[in-house]
Image 1 (cartoon, rainbow, N blue to C red):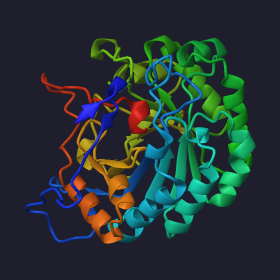
Image 2: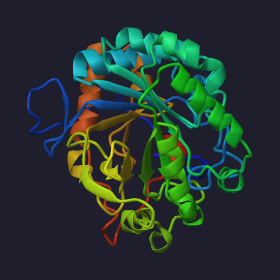
Image 3: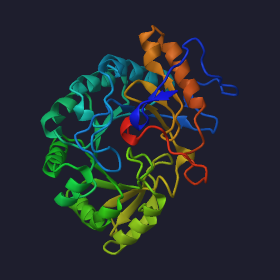
Image 4: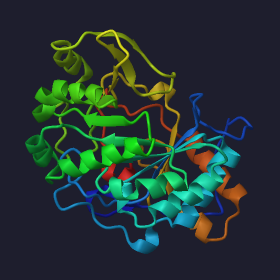
Length: 355
């Protein structure tokens, strides 16, 4: 394996030799050696983004992916069809970078929706420019949306994202609600310099009828500045929120959901906490990932990738592609391993993997 700056790998595979799957049961789904089955597909479609969040992107952005190396809308639709029809996937979420940076996003959503046979089609976005495109995206088949928003303080937002674009995010949120993309979820990454604004963000979310979820920062920033000792964990966040709200009855929507949901002040409002680092949910992980270049990545923290784009462009059948995908997932690691002394962060950053 070779790599470019910021750990974006180049993958080479021999299409004639599928990785070994000794002991794998004869089932169609994306099972692994630890009894998990992947039903949630995350598809990164670009490394580009309109923001430069310090926990994700370097100030200059990620090295560009050559246009010919990106999956096309047709190729994405084909892989979504294989995932749903042949591999048991039921949820498809498009990520980036920032998905709205793809000019052909509407076509990607349309082709994927046509191939998805009723599976949900969703997107994670920073919402900049969403107000101008949301109608076409919904018409193409978009059913749900998550919006990344870490603070409602304009100065904090500009420092964190290196861009003064908070009004544009608010415009996108308003448009998404008007288009019927509800319940609308807000994702906020916990950072030391925005912790004081966590109460304000929750108050704003409740007032605006959106569902807020806080996420522990993971060691996936391109600048490699993450340090566990400086990380805001779930316990510290809950103490801060508890100074203003009464939080009770934490539950999960389903066993594989990453968010622990707390009832706020007796309900009906809730707040989610995704404690990716300190309260690992790896044992119930149900995700499989496609990078923008068309490689399967079975785990955020596993650098082993399998090249499906090369198979497609080499004339492989859907059946062969599905077999390679199954083999990739059979080799999925048990968990991220951040609790171990020998933990090594992955080569790719979050912006290159997809959220």
